[in-house]
Image (cartoon, rainbow, N blue to C red; front, side, top):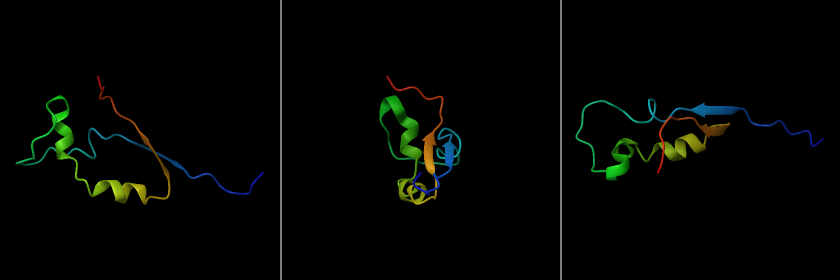
Length: 63
């Protein structure tokens, strides 16, 4: 046993919390994933700094 404590898991639903549905205009996005253009790029470093392991939990499918 190493004595280190595993970090907690954070299951994050990107559909609701990260993709805002407020007023636009939004930058143009990939036609297949146009909602991704609404995600603020500053969220990445902020999420990575959290003291947990991120697990993406979403119903979006990628072809």
